[in-house]
Image (cartoon, rainbow, N blue to C red; front, side):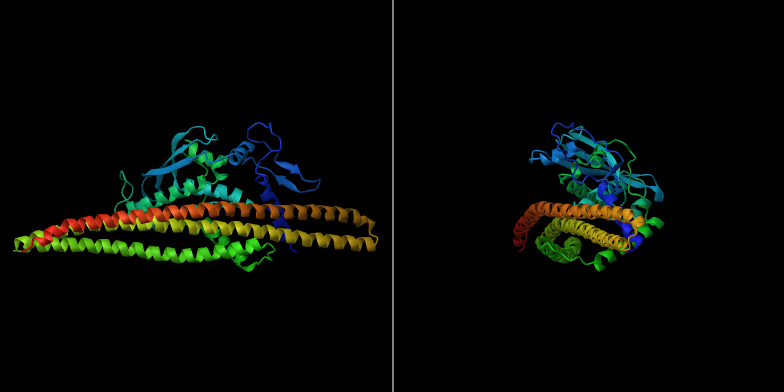
Length: 458
């Protein structure tokens, strides 16, 4: 085994130490509800493994999560996008308004200004801490180079962008609002100190995702790193001993593939509905022009009424297109991202399994070395060999514990995800059907109002 593999094992041990595996829950009932100050370096089981501890999750936070019986709520609105600055150095800010009764927040109703990179930053922080523990962290909206550039070069005005840019800004605003609310619905993520600070702090500058520029060398490096990690996901196959994971991985893959097809169909529906709205408007204009040159009074009046009706229907069909997009298409797109987050959690489990297997291989080698020294009566090497065997035994036990813990956590997360997924799909479908029915009923009322005018033609 290469030194790189051994180094990776040490990295894993440090990564898992970054967040308390026990989620900060203390066995002492009367422990103060305060942020825990943990020593930066601690000895583990009398071995040489150094564990880096951070203060990211407090015991009080986790107690709030465990005692949440549904009485707590949090609602977040992202609104009022405003362009700051001019040219390629400009950016958009959004007003983030929060209403909540969760005790960890200092106030119940508050707002602050955030920019897009702030949202990416809070996602990166949460992902770096919780994915390694098997948590499902909702993905942030992706960066849109074309839309961002159009807004940057648009003239300064009260509303950012002009024409098509206004539509793009609204799409991003809605995506950010959905992302931050999905994150807030997670019982652990919503009481994370970084997340609370993101919502509460009036500080203009927050730690943001670095190198979010449209084109940068670091962005290219990150792209190649992601490609390498993706290849690793594909090439390494784990011998699965838990049938639950076999079934769940297959289920996730099937759902993801079918959601991809549904999303593709919905995008086509949105485009077609927009075209239908535009063509309906063209019919309205043509009917209006025809009515002006029609000499028959009754027919001219009917054509004018038809033009008015088609114009109203054009607006309704544009609204239907928005419903197709915001209620269904974007909803499905969000869940495609969530399935990607689930796959990331599954991959973290595979990585832990790899480290566990690598540690076992190293332990076997150390035992073989010790056996050779014993047979050769190399007393000068035996003491060090014994120490290495003991050290790797501890590492194997720790890796096994981490594998069992992340497996258990993923099962809990999937149970929570399934409950929310069914509820979300139900609410979204009902909302979409009700919206479409309302539009259809309105169209019927428009045609019913037009019929008497058509019958008056004599």
